[in-house]
Image 1 (cartoon, rainbow, N blue to C red):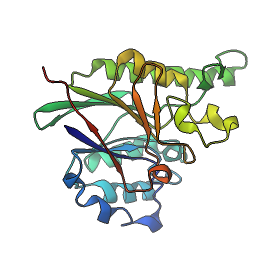
Image 2 (image 1 turned 180 degrees about the horizontal axis):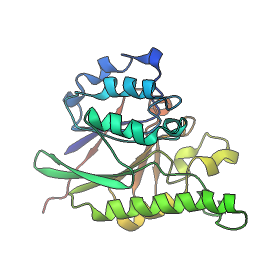
Image 3 (image 1 turned 45 degrees about the horizontal axis):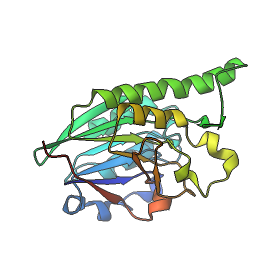
Length: 240
């Protein structure tokens, strides 16, 4: 069994230093890996990124994450990624990683994702250049997520995003903002490439559980939803 701890939307600021660390010190007693589903900072400053690095570095499990929209607010995405990687936190954007967990291979493919909405009520790449750019960004990121998942050679595969791949885990959010919370294109990428579990954040007032049209379990791990330092999900690799 592979135990996956996950959390998103911790929104750490400089005044939150040390807030999560006590709960993380012995995460290895409960999980084999910790996945971070974006919005690690409040405003994307490098000072906040340093707090994130200090909270999540040196744990007794590998830590893998993606950035969220808050992390990009100050246009420090690349610098933040470099800082976190320097502290041993593997950050993914249209990329994957395979970890050996007790002789079994856990593959994680990660991407921030983006908005656009869901089938029947979604934006399309038509009209003004601004709309084409908006939808085009989601198309590009979804394509990279698909490629990263497809390339994983693993016994268990997990898709990690910040934005939601399905509308079901958004229930509780105002329907008017669904297009800004996720996209069906992310769900299509997950179904087409295949995954055992999909994790996301971003929806603070949504719900935890859902399923893609193709049957992949989806979990919203935004901290306001799970109400803990992390939640743990167990996956059983198929025996060959």
